[in-house]
Image (tube, rainbow, N blue to C red; front, side, top):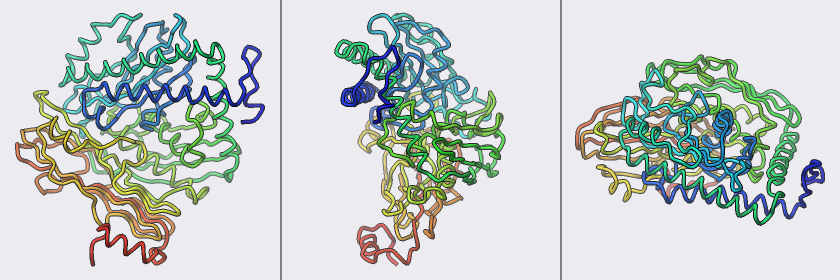
Length: 542
């Protein structure tokens, strides 16, 4: 870190580089510990097993200071939620709840709690936790109806309101939530876990304030400035220019018409601007994504093509601008349906932005990954259970390595639901969970393999699927072959990429996920690597 980055304002105490590094790590440790508390305290398998949640710390002005390494699509959009809360004049002891995609949220299942950090009765920052709740009401179990055409069909919509007011729980808000979800006890338990995570942050920040004094608050500014300067330095080293790409989404759940996504990425010295002009107008179905979701995907890409070791905070975002036309699929007007935008459109935004930058930084961009979260939701309409999972697939081959097999790619970073937990918690039986041989694209480096997960539903239920890359394959790069497309089956019969199906007890659901694209000319693949692929069963015998 250079001298300019550590120069304090007149009001700040100078922080030497060693002390700043200690403070930065302590702040990141607080954000990470928040995540541990949330995961250990949650009740739903989606949070306690899959870890579909994120935690972060913000300063008093709403700038992210530190985050845990959780879910990219959660974290990049968090600042918008904090901005909305700041407009509500938060006081010590307040906890705000919000999930409204048009006012700080992303999609309705992602519920965010923003708590004031005021160890000495003065707000010095905010603790923020965001978790995907397995049901928040709406027209189908799991609150992700594939055919939704208005947000009202997708569940309970909460603007930023006080869940806790000055330390006192707001019983009316709790009652409102319980009355509008299918699994109220589970929702309440998961919200308690989020509150506990935020409370742990206030406790730990209070301890750090006692240990370091006001220098801790000076460190908030210093770590943000440090990250900004490092990102600007990385961007300044990239070739200036405007780089373009386009891709499609495979229908919106209402029609199967292709939905164009276009981008122009301009690198200008130490800044980068990403413009989605030319992208389709907002659609009737639920693949619309709030601009905060598009920003999350872009921030993730910028972090991927620069140095991933740069501490992620507000400073990383300052050199980045993102725009999309109002009324477009990436900046829709209410009351558009948006639940699929967060999980599927975010993936395509990442794909197309990386594709544009492949010309500028070919040594830093992999081939196309699976490009979908493969959302599978199974639940009953009586509210007895709701299972939700995103299923991993193939990671695109890299310039000097094969792609990873059966992993979450891009905007999600969750684990899977272990078979034992799944069969214990739900009336479901896992029949098959395996890699898909030959699903990764061939190349000098092979694309990662997709997965197949087959589940028997042991009771009458509703199955919802929100998936992509069922007809457009993940791209190979530099002569590499495309990855395999995915497939969804109910009782062995194909169903659309976006579908909701009522099934009887004994029905089987199979999700076969896409593989990653290959990188480089297949003729240049090492023969020993080919033999290893054959021996390990990663390619079908010929």
